[in-house]
Image 1 (cartoon, rainbow, N blue to C red):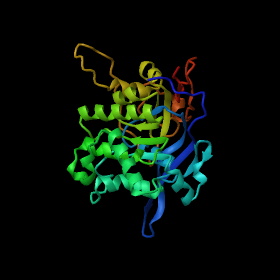
Image 2 (cartoon, one colour; image 1 turned 90 degrees about the vertical axis):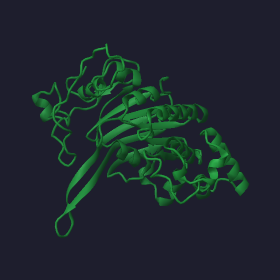
Image 3 (cartoon, rainbow, N blue to C red; image 1 turned 135 degrees about the vertical axis):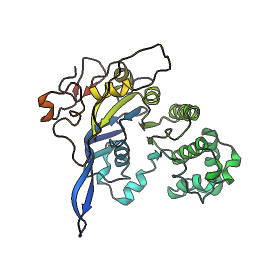
Image 4 (cartoon, one colour; image 1 turned 60 degrees about the horizontal axis):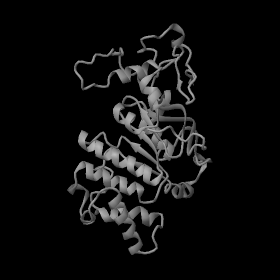
Length: 332
């Protein structure tokens, strides 16, 4: 993948974003604790690039993506889209902005209304955003969407349950593209699909990105998929970003111990190739009571005493022209 066009201002900028979910208990259902799903996250996404977001299940990846779109309201922090702070927008203003910011969900079947035909599913966003003055205009737009996403015209009169998983995800992509967005959050869009179908969907998304100038936040578990599609990658652990850099930097020279452990777990098809495996001890701590200091220190193979008390900041690694940041006291 080419380097992002970072000479332009970021399309999306997240500053000190926090999201806590209250935990209630007792007779009066009062808040007794909170789950710290996203903790002081800052990142930038530039026009035309794909930022991959990786990490273990429950680390806050999907929550971060939905907070950026304000599908979930952030507890603190700011999200800027084209320089505008969207956390201050009211319901009517954010509704207008939805045309520019869309999402593709993980489960294509659950995200499609089973009672609506595909034609109605694709026409609905056009009606909501008043795109297409007549039914003929909307039909023409829907036909173009089908062609772009590799779907047949006869699909329009069918229901979601009549399609395979890959076809349903193509419908979800077409629906996201219907209103001509600039930015799309891809929330694990291929994790529910067979491997052969995954490749088709990834190639389709890359072709659409080149053709339409789209910008992606690509949330995924599969590190090889992320390497293939991403310009830059951010690694998340227990609500925090622990390392960011270009795909080449992160996969060739990982700095954070957690990133190294993730990459060492990628299976290699060559049985004669031996690589060092980094095995982490213990389980991921609870987001209800995250560890003090560096959140990763209970599982880190190089943790020292100060890691227990002092949380490291994201800092520059090396002298590369592209920013490579890691939050580790001992990374270099």
